[in-house]
Image 1: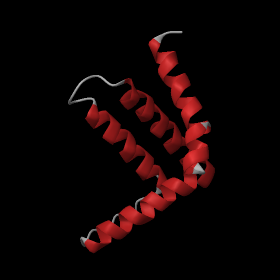
Image 2: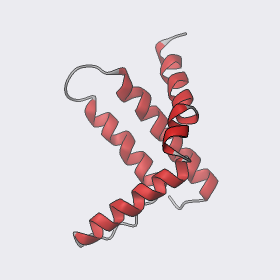
Image 3: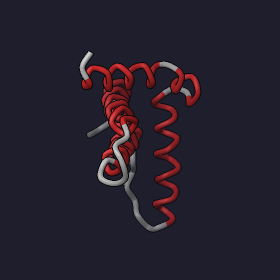
Length: 98
């Protein structure tokens, strides 16, 4: 198995395995985060209307940002791939607007 396949296989097993059991359904957890972030941002007089898809993409961006500092960490790549897959799933399953 090459590195690309290993990262994607690990990401797939995380989002449908232990993390799914620990954190709950992907859409619901990302909707909850979107609601919390929207509440926080509205307090700052910013109206964004973040969606669960936005949350997953922004979490992938956090993982991408982490690759710019510190030492190499496979987890950043695995989680980044997983968050992008989650973004695709919640968009398709819940018909979010792009």
